[in-house]
Image 1 (cartoon, rainbow, N blue to C red):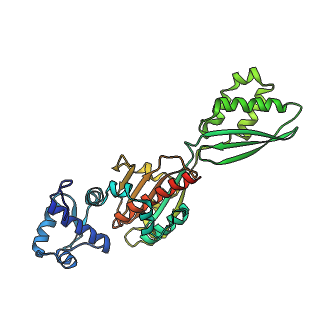
Image 2 (cartoon, rainbow, N blue to C red):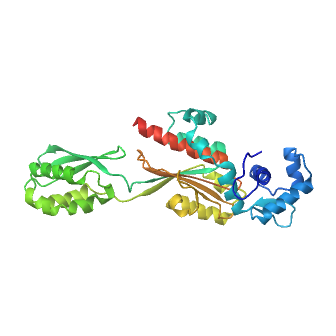
Image 3 (cartoon, one colour):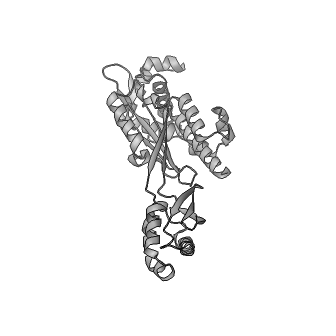
Length: 339
């Protein structure tokens, strides 16, 4: 039994409501009173369960499934179940990483791709890792001359990425010493600037360059066009997409909609309902027969992963979903620490 009252239900109602949703998640079918009594060997009659179901229906947590005697959790009911009866931030954010990994047979040094693939396949849902480079900044810029007409510009970013750009120039118009001065000014003025803003910020340095660099306009133009070429990108990597495509509980129309969502947009930004604002977790069960859980990643990591999302039918196993998000977030942190 649940030890205390939570949400809008009494202790007794919470207990039976959790059993109803647990069975719905297991079978994907409407739950009848007699079925619930038999499944969990309850020490009460079907009539008692029907009365409890009726009270839960009045609260808007259950709804009738067509004309059958069974009931299924409503959108409100699924949100209530996830938030009050399953989700436990103390458990999901304080357990030892080794214990979590052991449950899924994942090693601490597993890559995100390995872990995501294993977890999504075992739990039977689709998992999406979304990366975005908007917050990645410049941490270092170096110049290595190759000859009197070419050089290599090496850029190091806040995520640890190292990018090199070949810089060819007309030695009659640009001197190597002026390039070195330009690099010094960039170090003084552009470090910690977001990559996608480098071109704009470099252009704004023109008054400073005009006083210290010969042919400053040409040099700045070449850096803006050939070196500071960064655009904001949102990329997604999807694991076990077949869990959505092959699901019997998700209509073809909804499959098409969700595939478009996870392949071209930030899942996190499309969800309005916060499940846990402090730990940056959102839950969306508003779409027909579809559940989406998304976790925002705020720390800087090598692959710029900003969110991890899980998509599945409404009878998705929420406990496994929260556990999977925790595992993957901790692996990302662990890999980032090692790097």
